[in-house]
Amino acid sequence: MNKAAAYTRFDNKTSIVEQYAPLVKRIAHHLLARLPASVQLDDLLQAGMMGLLEASSKFDGSKGAKFETFAGIRIRGSMLDEIRRGDWVPRSVHRNQRRVAQVIDELGQELGRDARDPEIAERLEMPLEDYYRILNDVSVGKVVGIEDLGVAVDVVNHDDNQDDVAYESLAKVEFHSALVAGIKLLPERDALVLSLYYDEALNLKEIGAILEVSESRVSQIHSQAMLRLKGKLKHWTQT
Image (tube, rainbow, N blue to C red; front, top):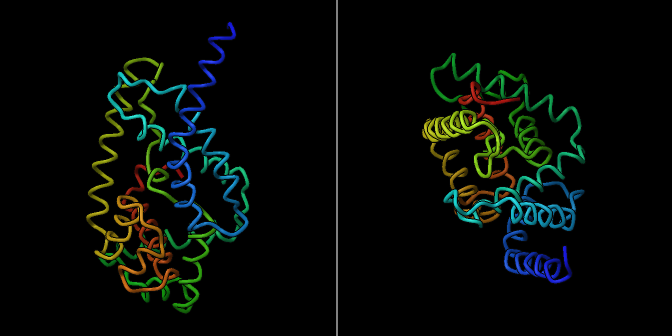
């Protein structure tokens, strides 16, 4: 590569970083709002920038996707990978999460409806306050996002067999339909919190102001909603 080509490539990357740095920052702050203090903003920003540069090199505009949408997925994924590599989550948090998810699923099947908080706590044989404490630990201890619930599909710039691409595209559409149906089955408050968080990109404090509850309570509702949703989508989940 000659010097002119090398300069042009570097200049393009510099332009991309400058243009989409606000997107990286917005995603980082959105994630940081529900993470422990041990997670540093600078680490998320650095990982996000790596995701942005990866997106710029792999994006194929002929596929019909907008770059900002494609980059946002790559940026958030890169940040989540960085968080998971740290693995600062105590085993007890994972254990309690699995236990609560199992109880929510069992009670839902027995009752024919979503179990109420006191019913879940009673089945867990613990005070309601302890149940809420577990939900808080799940919220700050493990990033559970919509993309963690189903098939991991990347249909943009895919170089594998075309039959595989078609199958994965269909799987993604079917999962999205199942996801929408699952959210509609959630209690109204749970569905509203997920909508405000993922669709409107509001943080926990902003959602709390709308619902007139504390930020901690929103965190609990979010965790419980995700565990309910994971149970409804258990045929799609990978973990």
